[in-house]
Structures are given as structure tokens and as C-alpha cells.
Length: 453
Ligand code: GTP
Image (cartoon, rainbow, N blue to C red; front, side, top):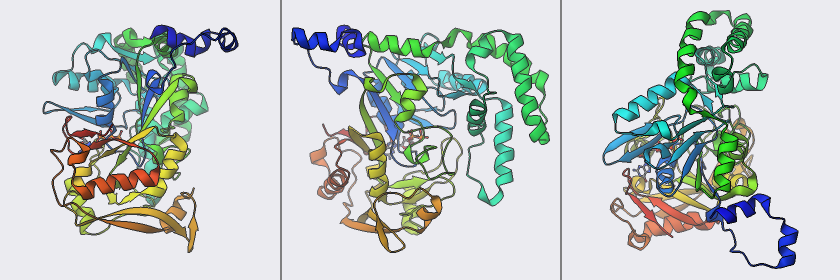
């Protein structure tokens, strides 16, 4: 409730409280901000877990990334796909925030809204808030993304060419433009925009940008976006004080985090738990449960090391059964066995309260299932995942092999009703990670999930 939240925010002096020895109900993690993050290389099915948690949330936020993300939520046979909008928007009572850490492509945002509105999304106008500190993704950034990726040649890092990396680069170079610039003095915006273009035109003349056309476009977008731009730091911290239930949906994943993933095959933001504080401006002590989403097997998009990769028919089978194609790019994903070295590393960084295992049903047809448990590099066991992708390419994996269950799990809704071998697989992952499994995904539909506790 409100008073508890206010107390937690430090409004009551702790010492004084100890002295008076008044017993107040204790705050639990459930009263604090909830976070959902990916534990692997993305596409774990975070969308469904977020969707479940959003049913009891008042505010759902994005804190990093841009429209390079893609959550899919299936409701009554309607497939909604979200790239920039927090997927909580499909819950009619949820407010959604696009935080300061997100980079926003405005034409794409409005396109996404219109597309989902045509599918039945309503009343979003009163519920969408965009941070005045969020950076803008311009056509310039998208073009730069394409040109830079081309120049990398065979060292391409597989960007989605949505301009996300170049926008974060502008942010760090300090010539980027933010939402507050757009809705503020347009003359100043024009001047800064021209500076940004000039900066890139000198180093990359092939960009050939039409500055005036872009400015005309942004003059219109400015009016369109104005009603949604807020000081999201203030908004969110007030929401915390008022005891509103807040959910943060991570995009991309820990192994794509710019600091913790196998650089340079990473995205340009912090997509592990640290990005929550920097991308929204909330204190770490307001964060309660951090839920990790773990796919029952592993996928990776684009180049780079993949120790547990399956390059045989089994990989093809899982790729087809799991429909492992990118939502944003349509690219075919590489497939492998679940990797505990990676998951332990992910847990070390994020400190999971519990995890969701998704897409267990995809393994239903296998005679046996494997779990990657340890790595060796140059014949010697290594304690954690190597920093360099070159080393990741060279590690040897030791596996644990378990019998498969050869039974459909799609209609199972209780843990005890899962085939025994499926239960054993889940319990083994739980034991090796030392984190409780709270949910198990067994199908695409919203309802295809087992809540374990
Ligand atoms: P990124 O943020 O881009 O990393 O994506 P994501 O983690 O949000 O993945 P997404 O929600 O797009 O899920 C990927 C696909 O898996 C979607 O089509 C989901 O409907 C589907 N999916 C999620 N959970 C399950 C499951 O338990 N079983 C099956 N068969 N499909 C699932």
C-alpha cells in the first residue's frame, strides 16, 4: 500500500523507527518493482511471461533497446507483435512507459501503434508515456547502420539495421537529440539536427540525406508525440511512492548485453538488470523480483561462437518445431542445447528470484535431451564463460544426457501432470542453476503455461 511504499522510499527515518519499535508490516519482494530479463541470446519468449505478470501490474515499462526487439503475444488467436511499445499496452488498465534508456524511432512507433490498433488495441492514448530524456532514432542512424555493417564485410555483427547502435553512439558522442529537444524550441532542434547531419556527412558522404525533408517530417511528428512526452523519472518514482505495481520488460538478453555479451556480437544497450536503473531512473533498492526467462534449448541469431550448437538434423527439427525465425528480421536462428555455463553466468549478473522455462513442448519429440554443464578451454576446465567470442568458439562442452519423454506436453497445466522425464529435465536445470522454476511454457497460446508455484 501507499504508506509502506513511502516508508521504503526513505521518507521515514530508519533509526527513529528502530527506537520507537513500532511494528510495521514488512515489505516483501512482491511489493517492489518486478523485472523480466532474458537469460540467453534473446527470443526466449519473454513476451508471454511479461503478459502474465502484466495482468496484475499498473505500469509496464521498457528501459533499453529500441524497435530492434520483438515480443509476440497471442491473445484469442490474435497475434500482436511489439517492437517499441511495452507489451503491457494490451492490458486495458495498464499504463506503459518508454523510458529514458530506450531509443525511439517515432515514425516506426506510430506505425506499430496503428498496426496494433487495427487488431483491437484500444485506449492507448491515455496510457502511453514517453520519456522526455529518450533519444531519437533518425533515418540518418538507420542509413549509418547499413553502411557500417557493409563496411565490416565478413566481420559483420548482424545488426538489425534499425539504427539502434548508431543512435546510442550519438548519445555517447553527445550530439544525439532527445524527446525534450523535439517538443521544445524547434529552432534549436533544427540547429542541433543540422549539426548531427554535418558531423556524419563529413565522415560518411555516401549518406546523402535530405535535411529539409527530414525536418518537415519531424515538425509533424512533434505535434503528434507531444501529448505523450513526460518526465518519466518523476512519473515512475511517484508511481512507486503511490504503491502502484510496476513491471519492467527487458528486451534482448543478457548474452547480448553490451558489457556482458560476447562483444562485438552484442546489442548497444545494457539488457541485463543494471539497465533497469539507468534506463528508468529508479533506485536499485526499489527492485524486488527479477525473473529470468530461459528457453528449454538455445538459439542464437547471426555470427559468433555457439558452444552447444546443433549442426545436424536435430537442430533442423528444433528450428522448424520452434519456428525459430526472427520477428524483426525474419532471419533463421541457430539452434543448440541448453547451456548451464551461460545460465549460471546470467544468474551471477542478474540475481534471479526465479526463472521461467519456455518452449518445453518443442522438445516433446526427442528420444534424449542434453544439458551443457561445463566448458573446457585448451583442455582445462574454465569456471565461467570466456569474455572473447574467439575463445567461446573454441570451448569444448561436457554434457549431461537425460531420457526424453516422447509425449505431448501442450495440454498439461500442472507440474505433476508432466511426463516424468520432462519433470526430471526441469528439476535438473533448477538444481544445476540453483534457482526455482516458477513457470513452464508448453505452447504458443497465452494459456499454454504451467505455474509451478
Ligand atoms: P526478444 O525480446 O526479441 O528477445 O523476444 P522474446 O523473448 O520476447 O520472444 P517472443 O516473445 O517473441 O517469443 C518467441 C516465440 O515463442 C513467440 O512466437 C511465442 O509465441 C513463442 N512461445 C513463447 N513461449 C512458448 C512456449 O512455451 N511454447 C511454444 N511452442 N512457443 C512459445
